[in-house]
Image (cartoon, rainbow, N blue to C red; front, side, top):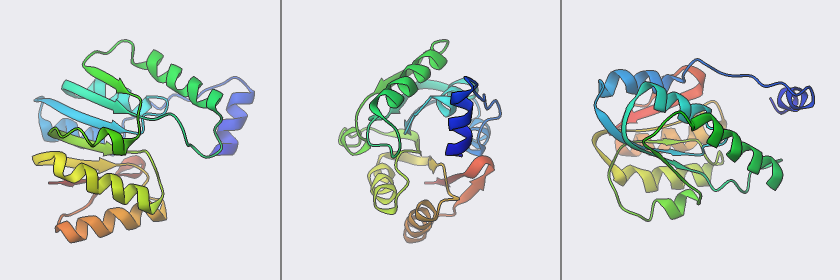
Length: 180
């Protein structure tokens, strides 16, 4: 994937993914047009955030990303990703960018209809994000995320959902979700 991205960058091309991820499709049906409050951890270029804003009705969507610490990305690369996300989301309202680490964001205790995790992809950080997010989700809400195809993400998701006695649902484009 990095090779393809590097080639597209070198050729000054980009790929726009118009099909929403599995969680977006699920959430649209599950929340049935209700106004929801949600969180996306790991915004990157804002592609998933755009699909969430396009398909769901929000009281507020909190978009949380530190834009630091990504492997193989320079500070300049991450600044470009942030600017691309800002530009992509201009047509939408009812969202707020929060530039901080997920662990710092989770210190503010609020309730959310869903939290979508797509920040870190190593076992310890995914597990920590899940543990921090779980108590903040309303009863009947959803904990979700991306990259279930990665071994460490899979391990953290399966362990925590097993302990909580919850069924993990899998969707298109490597999405997963658990109804709380």
